[in-house]
Length: 269
Ligand SMILES: Cc1cc2nc3c(=O)[nH]c(=O)nc-3n(C[C@H](O)[C@H](O)[C@H](O)COP(=O)(O)OP(=O)(O)OC[C@H]3O[C@@H](n4cnc5c(N)ncnc54)[C@H](O)[C@@H]3O)c2cc1C
Image (cartoon, rainbow, N blue to C red; front, top):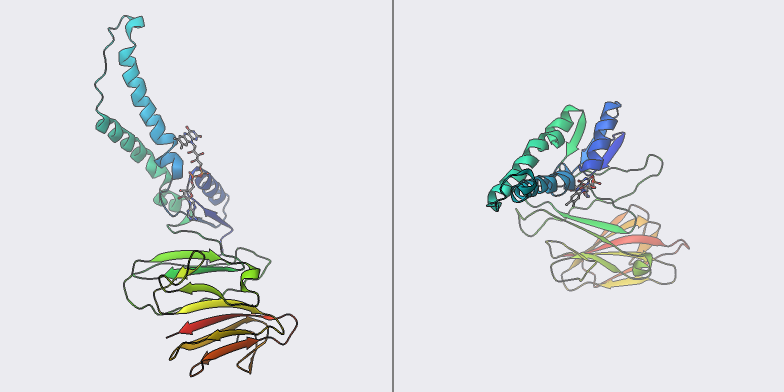
């Protein structure tokens, strides 16, 4: 799905809804992304429920404090379950104003999804499992974007969909392999878990400092050049090239040019 709206709003709380309604009324193409409940905190947990609760408290207090008006005070019998039903009914009465249906009628395209930003030196791992919807777009109209999307067949089907996002620094990958993803238990914080016996590394190879990876017997590798030029076990590869490696115990990555090269290395079954 390719989206190119005039305005993309993350969050259907009070702020997002006001901006979405205003922008749509100005005739702009608006996308609103909400991962949980339309109306955000105000409708569901904050302003509205708290005011409904306060109204119930006032009604109880009025029973206690009628003496000044000549009304015999009584201690109210509070049915807390019913009080909370009233809170829920109040939220439900207002909810249509903040609903997906209302905003779609206003011309806003509403996506019930998690919105995420991904930048340089970040990896997003998604397990599609029994079904996910995903789309990406470059949020900048002036700067280019270069992202790699890689699909790895999982060991099992119908897993629960999941999302993970990790970041790494230039230092962590310069002159060495930085593990980005691996099977359960293969890495600590900062390593995404994938449902396959596969390990994914990133590296920036600098001249005169080759990077070597040892493959266990009967393991294979795939090298993907993200940027620059590199030799892989002596074979020259350029930007965008990939190489499948089998029947080798070692993979040696070397850069000749001063600007070095960025690569992904997959250790595969
Ligand atoms: C008890 C209580 C009482 C309050 N009473 C009042 C009051 O009487 N009057 C008043 O003016 N204010 C009140 N507030 C404050 C009010 O609730 C907040 O100011 C208001 O909700 C802020 O709105 P918002 O849109 O900025 O954020 P939120 O309401 O927090 O909405 C943010 C929305 O963004 C969504 N979101 C976040 N990240 C993502 C993502 N990555 N992808 C997709 N969706 C995402 C969330 O699910 C959420 O729905 C109260 C707050 C509380 C807790």
